[in-house]
Length: 493
Image (cartoon, rainbow, N blue to C red; front, side):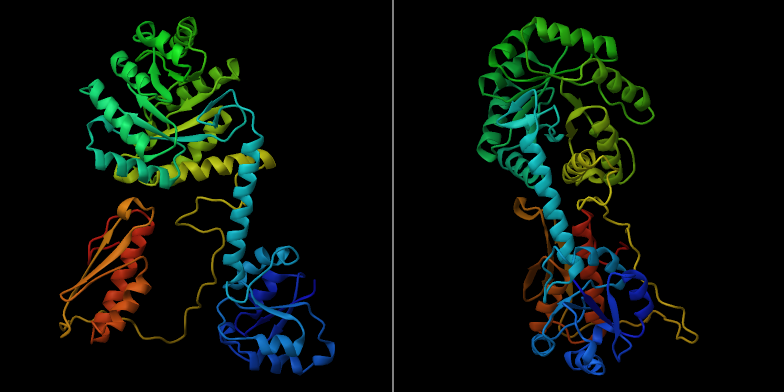
């Protein structure tokens, strides 16, 4: 396919550097590439129409306008390229296999296409995977994808509505399984109620998290899908009943003990008749032996390659003051090399909010990485939220400029004040909303732009500085929602 890229004078060199020999460049009579119009494009081409023989013209992704008449006159498609010139090197290799758009910039379209292709591949590999056990048709272990088990902390102590909302939220975030944490003061009635709520709320596999044989027995009676956990303190009392139920159980070492204790408890569970076993060598927090615990995982998996392994990532993320995204991805990669089958997170503290989604995406990345025998990069799925792989072109420091200064005067808008807040994870949905409250109306929206457009349409502001201030605050609120942060009007973000 022969491709022509239309650009402006300022971006010419950037375009040439990015496109290399994958396309030819046409410089239009305009400084800013985004200001290219059909008339300017045709004028530039008509200067040498005799040599025009292209299959596709890429115009910048930020260009607006209808190029249909130009397409008919030239006899070729005119489609949106990427928004930024530096992305051309990423987009052009796909020109022969992707149908680009007149409405969606190529970089956005291709990102969606690559992600869709990656997810399809993940599902294809999962369908072909062979695993030693299943939970409600979900494969656990073997070469199947690591599954995310999300714990509802103190599920037995939550009221029905709160528990249902928490479970629904975890499922929307991408949890593969739901774990119901039982408090120290839980009763069999509490366990029965929690399992009942879970069954009414989700079709995902559900586990009970307790060592108490009485509570485990009630969970078995209620048809629980998996038990967390058994060790030497309860295996004699409850092991045979778990065996009769035919469900999997997670085996842990005795408290304060290590590898030998885990192996001994695995043998005790087998002696009790439990056939479906998942081993938890226990991942210790940083500062409390994490390196030794990783070695313990490695040794156990080497000796028991066919037994699914439980990887308690929450032990680390909850006990380190670091953004969870990179920690979760790194631990997920380590877990993949240690034979982990289940990635466990309570997503409990504020700093670990988002861990379920992060671990789900990281587990998908590791599947693709293993399939391609490559590092987990350039897969179509990523966990880059703040930093960036490709930097946009920076501005050049001007020779002369006006030093910006904050206006110290503030005049109240006669139309009234507007209070801004956010409602995260509204009604159990993954995305929250921005709330803008005026004395006369409350406005809800997902983005700063749609809220601001509504404010302007309703003529709720009359001063430019008020509108500028609201735009600034609304964008901060939008970013707070995107990154799972709290928001307070006028605070630094």
